[in-house]
Amino acid sequence: MMRLPLPTLPTQGETVRDWSRRRQYRQKRRRAHTDVRFIKEKTRKQMMFEFTRRRGVRSPVTDAPTFRVGRLARAKTANETGADLSHLIDRSYNYHSPRELHWHLAERLGLAPGSVIVREAVAA
Image (cartoon, rainbow, N blue to C red):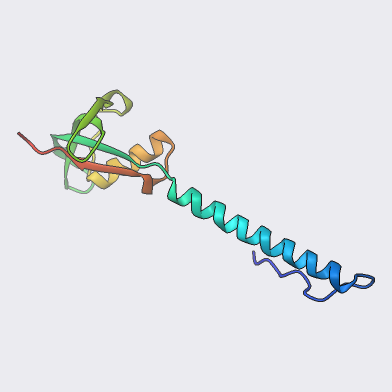
């Protein structure tokens, strides 16, 4: 749905001064709205998760290898792992890809998919 611009000329009975004030008010509102949207985008929280992969079975539908999640933890930083969150997901589910796990976590936590980062833990 496209928004049509408001009339730019003074309406009947309106002075040029009133019209100018109305126009300035609309411009301020438009700028304020874009500033709020910019701030919301900049302050969006990102959550980083780290998982360990357990071997799964081959999918009967696609005949592709799957995996199960052994451990899921929230990563505090790029090098440090935080609390174990394995209880939030069904660990018996066979995921086809880390991308599927990524979308599942975003949906489960009620977050935008862009704000969830999933990485696989390096085997020691």
